[in-house]
Every structure is written in structure tokens, then in C-alpha cells.
Length: 402
Image (cartoon, rainbow, N blue to C red):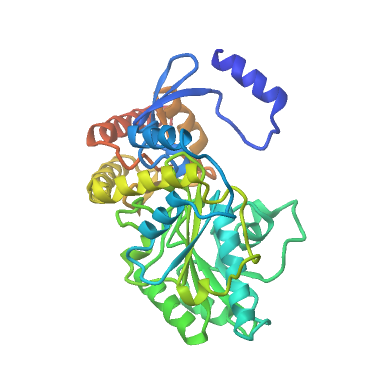
């Protein structure tokens, strides 16, 4: 089928819940993808930070094929070897932590919110069910994670949302402290806010949040769904800050394209869940965990986190040079391979994204004036140069038009 035929078929039978670009991708290898018409693209979205090892990495393909021949699904009524191994690898640096597996970031965050409430009740404080999150945050599309998300645009049309969620400005410790009351049970934050435009927390802020949660006996939850698993140049983004949460969540890059999520909690909190309290039919199935194990072993054992640091520093330097060249670029920000260019608000970000796509570069636009870059963790300096050259050409065309 051609791209046009796939687009027509999709528009006829799929719900219109996405604003899709007019291309149909049918093949991928490494950092490159191809559409049904044979056009090649550099993929600097990586499935929105999902394809950590790029497209169709041999490690992922081999793990999928091997496990598919042995055991695909049996449910959590039974012990599952790949699940146990993956859990052990995730928590090897977090003594005493325990893992719950699910299928997505939203499910992982939903599990974390349920655990925080259950923990309060188990400890004789059922009134402490409220959760404080940050403005500009994004935690998922379920009703509870939507209520936790600090962006009204995502919530419109789904009211009334579940009660008990309050949003305060990000990186504003005073605002957070003033929001804490007798009903507060948890604080949930992304160490780096991704979906709203790549906003890292400051070190003083996260250290202060950790101290507040300790003082008030609140569960501290870090949403590492997008920023975790090497994306920022550390195994987990919160490791940049020298603080540790009580609960954290993972998904996206854990399966490098295969759906899997995880909620990880200190044992004190994990013990609040008892059999029957929470479950997921497909969560942690043998196939997903075999892939997740292969991906995580590759990230940890092949110098990929160190590579992300070097590649991210280089990419950020090149984006900074672009900012010096084009005055309509307001800011370069981010960590590792989670970066953004913020443009002046009068700029047409979607048009820049479209022109980049036409020239063979896939990037993500946020609102009307932010460009987000989430390439696979395996991206090379040569591929970064190719992407920057395309951006430079598109910016030059834009400058000529103005």
C-alpha cells in the first residue's frame, strides 16, 4: 500500500483522536524510518522517547523472537522468570525496593497514586488522600492521571475529574509548602517535565521537596516515564539531583517499542499493597519482560548512558550555536537526549516541524513555539549533525521569508 492508501483506510476506520502527519511509516532501522512511498527520515522523536535503542534493534528483535517461541502469556496467577529477572535488575541500585509491572506510563502512575492512598490508610490516616502535582506536568490519560496532570487543556471535556489533586508552579518550593495541608498524602513530580516543553527541576527545588515530604510524612513520587532509563544521561533522572523518591514510575523506553510499564516503591510503601489490591492482566507478561530485560541489560552494559551524556552535550552545543545564529530562538534547554528549542511566541512552530519532515527529519512540536528532540539513545554524532543541518536550512528559509 502507498502512504495515501494507508491514510485513507485509517481515516475511514480509526477514531480521530490524533492529529497525524500525512505520512505512513512502514519500516525502521536504528535512527532511520521509511514511509510507504520509500522516503527516508531521521527519527528524532523515537516514538516519543519510546524507542530507546532505535528501531528494530537486533537485541530487541532477538528477545522478542526467542521468547515468543517459548511463552507469551500466562497471567500473574503464576511466577514468571523474565518478570523476576527484570524486577531484580531495575532495583539493583535501590535496596529493598519492589516492582509492579503494567503496560504503560499512565498505568504505572495510576498504580503509584493508588499505592500512596493505600499506604496512608494502612498507616491509620485515611484522610490523607490528596496529591500535589505541578503545573505543566503530564502524568497520563486515565481519569486519575488526567486529574494529576497540571494542564487544563487536556482535562477539558472530561469533567468532573476525580477529586483530591492540586497543582502548584513547578520549581516553586514556597508554593508547594503552602499547598500542604492535613489531607495531603503525596507529592508527584517529573524531575524533567517532558510533554509541556522539557523543563528540568532545579537541584535546590527537588532537595527541598524531599525535605518537605520527609518532614510532613508524605509519599514522594517521581514520574520517570519519559525522563528515565538513560534518557537524561543517568539511569534515572532523579540521580542528577542526589535525592531519592519513595515511589517512581517507568515505561516508554523500557521496552524500546514494546509496551511495558513499571511502578517501583520502597519496601515500606510496597507492603501496603496486598493480594487483590491492584492487578494487571497483561502486566509483566513473559514477552514484555523478556524484551524489557534485554533492553535494560543493553543500556546498562554497553556504555549507553555514558554515550547519552556525550551525545547530549554535543547536541546541546550545536543547538546553542543555532540559537546564536537565529535571534528568534529564545532558549535551549534539557538534559542528555531530552532537549528543546523554545522560539519567540510569534513563531510558527508547526510549520517548522512540517518543513523538517519534508526535508527528512522528524521532530516534535509543542504548542506553537517549542521544538522537542528525543532521538534514540544510540544516535551518533553524524546523525546529530545531519539533523542540525536540516534545522539550519529550515531556519535559513524562514529568515529569508521574514
